[in-house]
Image 1 (cartoon, rainbow, N blue to C red):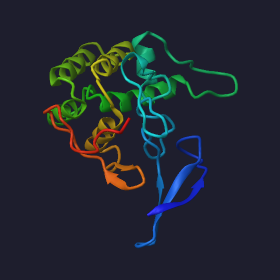
Image 2 (cartoon, rainbow, N blue to C red; image 1 turned 90 degrees about the horizontal axis):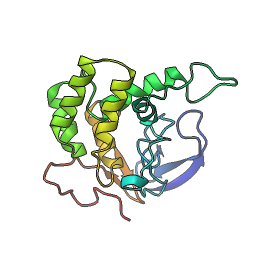
Image 3 (spheres, rainbow, N blue to C red; image 1 turned 90 degrees about the vertical axis):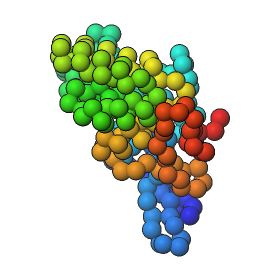
Length: 204
């Protein structure tokens, strides 16, 4: 298996994506860079195309799918109109909310079993997710949803891209994630033991 060519996309990341090809099976497929998912314009988390992630206070969610929720937590609504169009519409912020709430396990409509699996995968106490979902139910609205997502993001420690990819799979948002580092590898699920299987975290 190797790189066949690079191509531009009309949807998804705004840079050329690699097309890999398996010579044995004569099948080609698009490889999305780390932190990206099919057709998504925004990354799941801050991450370079080489798979390196900043940690702690260096982690900036502004260009990710969590940007809308983070702004809402700070009471910063996106504009309802803008000259020449914008990627930061109020309607876009609303659409990103559902994704962010699901990926953080704070969506009030999630089943408890799924919420607990998300908590385990993210390595965040399940009580945090349950409490934030309860607060949204008690006071539904823009700001409470933003604060719920931000509360979970504040609990994330260490590399998060692979964990978020697994959460998206658990929630049925996309298929089983694979990781390309010259070899195509499945992204393993995470246990609550605090240890990961080999190659579950990016090097560096």
